[in-house]
Image 1: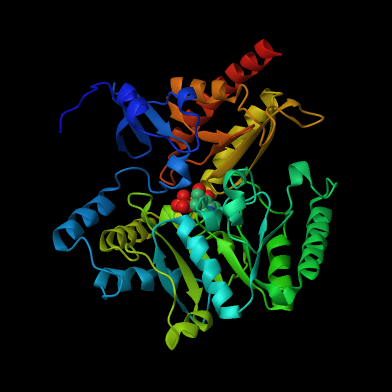
Image 2: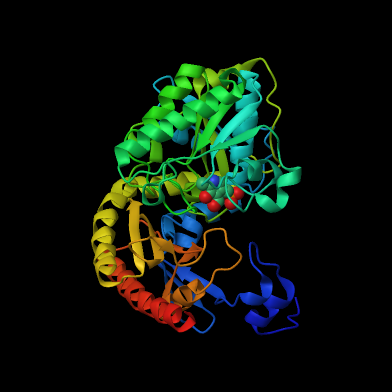
Amino acid sequence: MAISIPDTQTAHKRFVLTPWSAQAAIDPPAIVRAEGVAMYDADGKRYIDASSGLIAVNLGHGHPHVVAAMKDQIDRVCYVPPSLFNDRRAELAEALVRLAPWPEGGRAYFTTGGTTANEDAVKLARTVTGRPKVLSAYRSFHGSSMGATALTGENRRWPSEAAAMSGVVHFFAPYPYRSPFLTTDPADECRRALAHLRAVMLAEDPERIAALLIEPVVGSNGVIVYPEGYLAGIRALCDEFGILLIFDEVMTGFGRVGAVFGGARYGVVPDLMTFAKGVTSAYIPLGGVIVREKLASYFDDRAMWMGHTYSGHPLAMATGIAALEAYVAGGLFTRGLTIEARLRSHLLGLQAKHEILGDVRGAGAFFALEFVSDREARTPLVAWQGKTQGVMPAFFASLRRRGVYAFGRYNIAHIAPPLIATDDDLAEISEAIDGAIGDLAAAWHAAN
Ligand SMILES: Cc1ncc(COP(=O)(O)O)c(C=O)c1O
């Protein structure tokens, strides 16, 4: 095909609409190749991928075992409709169910990503319970389609709100650094948050609530790790009222928080788990729902009214199987615990050095840096859900100049390297962050 504009940067701006962005304001590098923790732009400049893409490339780029399995599957068969059976689909479903916590087992249902997984999990919960409502947290992201956007708690819901799915009620969940419950004590935060949630359930009539959907660790709303006992308290409330508990494991799954799933890390068992991203290390789109057997069997003699052309796509299935093998072979489901210890120590060192770094928090290979203009008052450097990103682009641009890619929102940066990152990679990332925080502080002082 003829290339009308040879410069990728210019061609991209001319022809591609980039999601979630004002098009004129962005100027990212054009990545043309990647391997391991590193991505390379057209000029050969190397960037360590310190956010694993969008917290998804858990195995690092181009894992040879996964790439080989993809090539092999391309030669065998690329498409089989969901209405026909397929060997790879059965194999991946079994492997996923074996990772689930239910003694009675379960079954897997496949979608095309996290958005469709959450939307279909809600459909499934409504169908099985016959109840109409769903609860989710304000500080949450569950996807961007008209249905999943309604489940999303934050401002990415607002533009499509009027047409979004009805029946979703939001509640406040704990956020220890900025407590919605006006306390600095995590135990109090947990108690008050659960009392608030119980009140919301009662106000909505618990018998009309099909499910509660929650990220076990909040992802793109700032890596909020819930206080001890909160998820278990939610489980107890759901049991009390016959509400199904859905864990959105789209970001937290497949080793990201130091265990195979977020639920496993915190010892809490949901009824359904949605997944995407890390299941294929993002090499190809795939999502789905793992459903405990007692819910799955509801559909044995009733049709399941949901599905997609690409449900259980063989190429995605082969990629998922090989990715799971790579996680197991590399001990990567728990490698996040080692990364957590190393990163926490580096990042706390930076917090001690830089006034502007208000909070460092995280679990596994999943951290947030929250920037403030006043550390005592915890004033956000840029207003959360405000109209601009303020000076924050200076931080990310400085990181890129220093050979590190990461992404963030408003006053928060997400640091979530691939699970294969070595101690040297983590040191290199931390050194770049150190310099970029210096540049961020300088940009802030110049503007204020
Ligand atoms: C927790 C969570 N759920 C759902 C989604 C939506 O997934 P997808 O972009 O694959 O549709 C995301 C995306 O970032 C996510 O972080």
